[in-house]
Length: 246
Image (cartoon, rainbow, N blue to C red; front, top):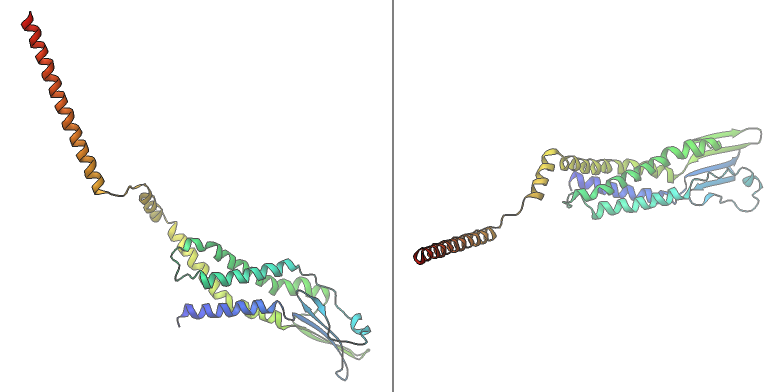
């Protein structure tokens, strides 16, 4: 297995992790009594927002429920689309087997869209959604000695997979873009531009057609010369007849 193939396999595994992370828990907020009894639990998912596994008397649990983060679902849908499209480009638009690299430009920029959304979740999620809602990052244990309750704040496996996925997809995306960009630079170099222009304006050499054209020209010239000689002969004959009649 070559180095490029290994990077490709790692990249595909990273895509699977990114896709899976969207449906896992991204953050959890838990409350325990001093004797470690769970009395409050809330977990956050990008699609379902906050959910709890505590049943029965939920008065305290409902009281400590965090505010909805309201991350736009459109971003998650776009993220899923970019994951699928990027996987398609790697599996069916392979750089090593595709000779028309100029047609792969959109996929290179699509991969950058994927990594941009990935970075959005990694950085924007804690900065713009967690911390403003007083949800500590990445984890923290807060003890309320007056109430005898311990609050535990922690990121979830979904967020962790986002970080791992970024590490796994970044090298191949960089390789994919650099290969496309190098081909684009070489394709647009002055030497290649001039060469393509010459190929476009230069007519293909057809020897049979050229020979036929030359033979036609020779026949036409011979015929024209013969007609000119006949015309001159007739003209001279008419002149001689006129002289004799005088």
